[in-house]
Length: 279
RNA sequence: AUAUAGGACACC
Image (cartoon, rainbow, N blue to C red; front, side, top):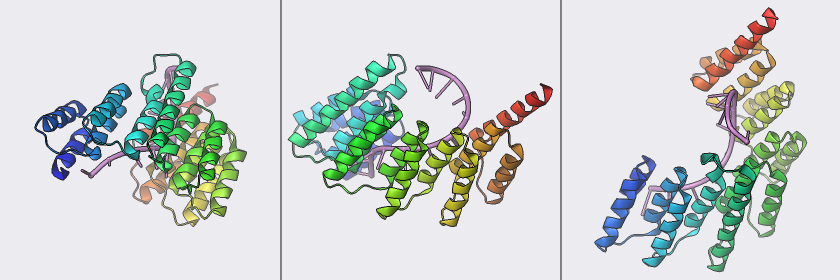
């Protein structure tokens, strides 16, 4: 089972879900033992392609053939439903989103009915879905209900919420969340910091963002490509190309390779600057 | 061997 499972996981990861599914069905026909991991791997492949309904069919399929879905199976589906709108952009956003969250929550109820307890992954899928829908307040309520249920939050929960509030320009709430995570002994990581930095930059609080960037380093965290690019983007948007360039140089000095996004920010910044001179 | 969070632009 393990060897087959590994093969299915690899296929699914490589994006060849159709083949992974064929292989899985083939194994089932030959009465080979299959476990939830094999099915989960295929489900996530379909979810990543935006074909959540196919993933749902797989859930039914596994039940039919006597494999009990686990908490991961459900979490994968919930996450898939929450993200569907990001992949299929055709339908009206709000309608689609409400449907998505409802359907995802239905799954949560179903899981609980079957004695499968939602875990941090499950909750965070919903929290993230709500945040991306700009409903961070609601996300926070779900988060609080999760705490009431006795789950201990982790850095991912907090980072998700901080990013959500930051994207809604509610930096006060984002700051409070950072404080509360520290009070709970959860250490912000580079993703938490980058979320905060991006939020501050988009609210024209570059100075605070820069202080956080320095704080992150003081805390012993190593900024990566994304952290640097977020900060560089902030300087560029503001037309502060001197600081942007300085940070870009520092990034290279530290052996972090910029990518196309980093360069896009810099080029964009310089273009805007020359237009300002022209004007 | 399988699930959740961060960067420009575009989409919304």
